[in-house]
Amino acid sequence: MLQIEHPVTIVGDIHGQLDALIRYFDAVGYPPKVQFLFLGDYVDRGAKSLEVSLLLFCYKIKYPHIIHLLRGNHECMKMNRLYGFHEEMMRKRGSAMWRRYQNVFNELPLCARVGQRILCMHGGISQNCTSWESFRALTKPKTPKTCDEGLPVDLMWADPTQDKCNAFAINTQRSISVVFGEQALTDFMKKLGLSLIVRAHEVSQDGFNFMFGQKIVTVFSAPYYCGNDTNCGAIMHVSPSYEISFTVLRPRMIPTPENAEIVKQMENNYQAMMALSPDPNRGRHLQPASIPPPPPPMPVEK
Ligand SMILES: [Mn+2]
Image (cartoon, rainbow, N blue to C red; front, side, top):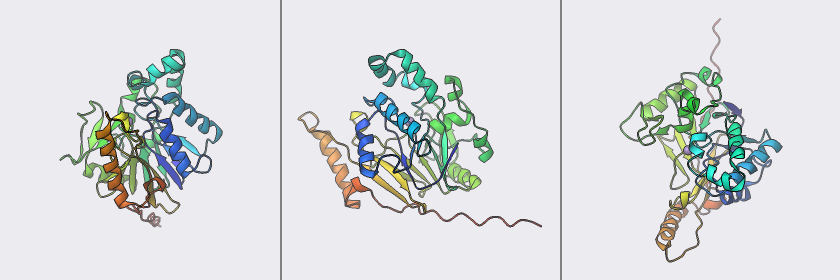
């Protein structure tokens, strides 16, 4: 677990979309002007996984205290063997380099605490976590088997659910890890003294999505996901005083007779967002999760 101090800008799934990554940098500033926390899923799905990961690794080397890179479920060999990165690397660099990449992915941390009140990860929370001690005891999973076990698998894979599941249940949609309901989340946050969980991992129409009375937010940064979703992408800013705001990217697509319907859907979706905000590409300054100041220290018993 990383400890990061705010202000920080949090980025969700990029999935090989180099153009979207550059558009975010153009909108909010390039490192080292802005501190960034990336929540993983740099590779797969999009066409430029190599370029996205290389750029981020270069920034990490150049500004190690400004760029923070967490591990997503696609930074595991069994995923990026199947969902695009392996095939892209075979074309661009060969299988030896694809294998070397896995060694780097194995070193990425699994979660980050921002200040004292916000916890960030790619997937979600876990039954295997009972205190901060569980996070301190975390070790990096470096084999396909250990990626699928214990706290790491849930941090990379779990999803919140609106279903009648107050606690944890098997994640049948993904066939791995768990889903968690509001009660499980509330208990978890209370135990750790948290005000907000920030995670990525699920596509969201607006690029971000609050659930459970704004206790958890999904940030998804790949607009027009997989070339068939009409979603916007978003990144989230945490100010020095814990104010939350978003910069939203609209999906971009050149209309042709074949994709006219999807372009129309995207436009409608974007217009609906515009109704809420005059300038989504410059950042929507919502304050939905104004976080109370930390509680005063416990009185010491004499
Ligand atoms: Mn994911």
